[in-house]
Amino acid sequence: MSSRYLRHLPIFLLLLALMGLSGFGAHRIAQQLGLSDLQATGLHRLDLYTASLEREIGKYAFLPGTLGLERDVLDLLKHPVDSKLTPQVNAYLEQLNERAGTLSIYVIDTAGHVVATSNWRRADSFLGEDLSFRPYFRDAIDSGSGRFFGIGTTRGEPGYYLASTLADDSRTLGVAVIKVSLEQLEKSWSTVEAPAMVTDENGVVILGSVADWKFTTLRPLDDATRRAFDQTQQYNRRALKPLGLKEIRELDHGARLVSISKTLPEIVSVYPVAGRFLAQARPLPGTPWTLTVLSHLEQVDEIAQSRATVAVVGAAFLFMLGLMLDERRRHLKDRLAAREALQQAHDELERKVEERTADLSAANHLLQDEIAERIRAERTLRAAQDELVQAGKLAVIGQLSTGIAHELNQPLAALRTLSGNGVRFLDRGDLATTRSNLERIAQLVDRMGRITGQLRAFARKSTGQLQPVALCHALDNALALLDPRLTQANAEIRRHCPLPEPFALCDANRLEQVLINLIGNALDAMHDQPAPCIELGCESVGQVARLSVRDHGPGLDEAALSHLFEPFFTTKEAGVGLGLGLAISAGIVRDFGGTLSGTNHPEGGALFTLDMPLCEAQNHE
Ligand code: ADP
Image (cartoon, rainbow, N blue to C red; front, side, top):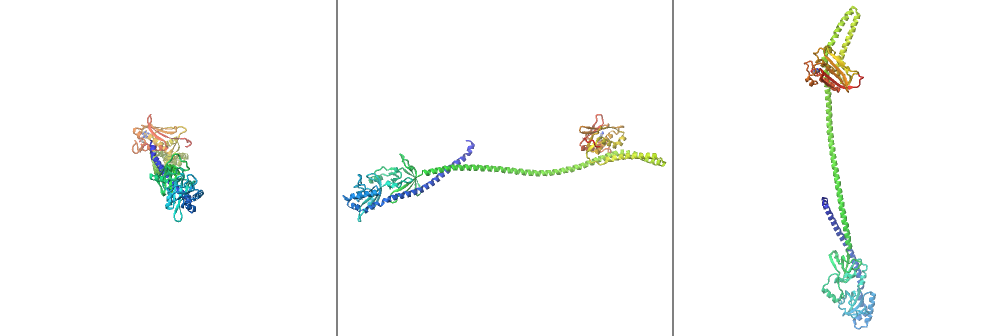
């Protein structure tokens, strides 16, 4: 058996137990109810049948006594032997018998002999018969009246005997007897709805709605009783077979559950005559008889069985319904739990998201603070760099100042001479020479103005704003500022500038600062050469605007190559170089988005290359 079936086994067993219990319970209850219903109906029938029997018997009860009112009867009894009254009384009784519808009416003298009878005409007439052995006769003699059920001794006809003594004023003369046929009594039962029977004091069925029950016994008869029957000829030697009625159990109010076994051949009857019955009995007043009404349990059993079936099916249905409801409840519970779990997970997720959001916003704040800090630092750095660039520029200017001062000294001396000569020529009245001197003075002042103008332009603090710059023009500006030095050094400048000249996106002032630095370094490197030569190149390579400065000096040694752009790296004497020129220049070029590199030219001397983003806008000066 699979585990699935095993798991369901207790439920099946429970179902079976429930079905069994409810079936049994319903059967019991329905049977109880049915029985009490049946009992009530039975009692009702008992009342009804008793009343009708009483009525029927009561009709004849007074009849024997009325014979005492008849003079002839009494006279006959006084002198019964060979009385002339016999035919007269016989005729009277015959007539009465016919009128009353009884079986026979007869008169017995005190010795027990029939002196007159209604059936005097018949061959089997009672007339002259000795009936002193009949109990009703003896009872009547003893107590004034007698009642008896018995079977006729002559015709074997069963009947009910009612006897009354007949007496004159002083003594008992005899007994008047009326025999009533049982059929007459049974007539009142023609409409009974359930089998009923009347048993006499011996337990013999004398009246029954089922013909075959008649003269059966309800209880076994012992030999002594049978012998007594023989003597009284009560049942006229009928074989009194047992009915086969067995008591199952006793119920309330004198009712009993009994069973009647089936007899063969099958009895034909409108009622069920075998099976289980509810028997209710009651003594019939005025008689030693008992009236018993039998109600068959078939219907009760059927109802109980159908109720039990309904209960079993109902229990199974309820059980299934219960199982289904339980299943549904469990399903709902699971769903609820799942929903709760989902809700919890959702809440947890939401809580985490909130936490993370809080973390993120905190991180964001931190980041913003950091960015602000960085920006501040950048600005500070930028300002510091700007300051550094400016400082570097001032250093360059310092280096240039000697040459410029020398450059200015010459026109100043010339101005001194020209102005002194001018006064003298004016005194002499030589106006033409004076004018020529003044024109020369003006030219010199212009030249000095140009020099100081260039210096002032270079010295001004640059904003660092990027814009298109003509490279050859910037180169010329740098050369102009260096002019005194170049002249002093007797340097040769070889300048290669293509047309149209390339433009780079940069800051012109700072580019000039870089170029002055590079050219200055080149002059420094060749300071011991009588005719130094510097080659300046300008070209565009792809998207790059390139400027190059090459000298013919000793070139860059190992140490210089590895530390070229480091701040404070210098090979120059103290007071000549600070070692910041190339570091500042590289920073400036980096700000342009370009690169500055230094190497040795294959043919000797150092070569510095400056690459910057090429700019298309060539209409700028
Ligand atoms: P400074 O000129 O104050 O020394 P720089 O940063 O301009 O500072 O130069 C750093 C060093 O690089 C120089 O001291 C020099 O040794 C070397 N150098 C720069 N330019 C040249 C060059 N054209 N030829 C040889 N050495 C050079």
